[in-house]
Length: 67
Image 1 (cartoon, rainbow, N blue to C red):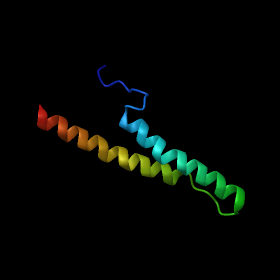
Image 2 (image 1 turned 90 degrees about the vertical axis):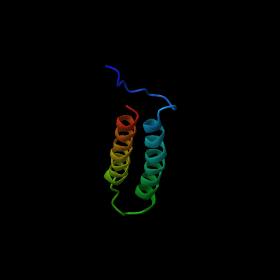
Image 3 (image 1 turned 30 degrees about the horizontal axis):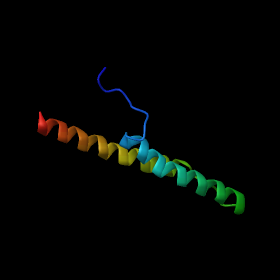
């Protein structure tokens, strides 16, 4: 199993998850505290997985070109 997931800040996926999710969670908490607007946490998840799709596709293209 050579495609192991590395849970560290060297991993770009982990860094992007933190960059997207931490501000989203903070914003959602503030919105819930100070307004009556419903919060949709799925928006931040959708943004992350769209980025992940394009990142994996780019990695796959680079891997196939270098092989």
